[in-house]
Length: 260
Image (cartoon, rainbow, N blue to C red; front, side, top):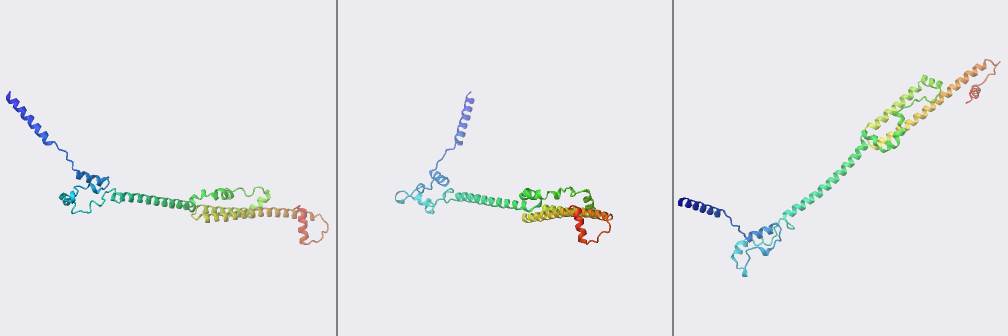
């Protein structure tokens, strides 16, 4: 029994000694605390540099500590001070951010300008040009959607135009203008040059329409004159001893009888 009690006392004593040996006492050094505070966030107060000079500056610990560094207490070395390195880095980051935003704004302006110029230069987007949408598309509609050019003409005039090749000439001219228009719309060029091409094509188109109407009117007049001339010749067979007439008189007779 005594042996067991002695063994338990021995074990308890060893546990107590080990726990006491592992206990760490928290040490507070005011000098280190002051240094940590002034280096991180608090004011760089030269009065808190310890050890101090003491009475009449006779404290030897002060001279052993700060004697070799006399300017250290007077120099603000906080990273976040007004002139500290961390403050300068933050200011530099802010300045770089402003510069980056300025560059981004400049590049966005260049991008928008480039896209605007590209939209005016590339032929694939000429369809959205406002001037084309509002004016030239309607004026030049018949170039890509042609109608029958012989509508409104009599059958005799239509036969005459087809027989003499006028219809073929008109078709070729319309095809050439349509090809020019297609090239102006699909070729890459400046917007001003493209608009000038539209205008020139429109002038040629209007001139072609005017010439076509003129040719149809002349064909109709020619057929009427031919018919009137034939009727005059037929009528002359029934006249007795017709008087000899000049060419001008014959033309006047034809015009008077053709009701033109």
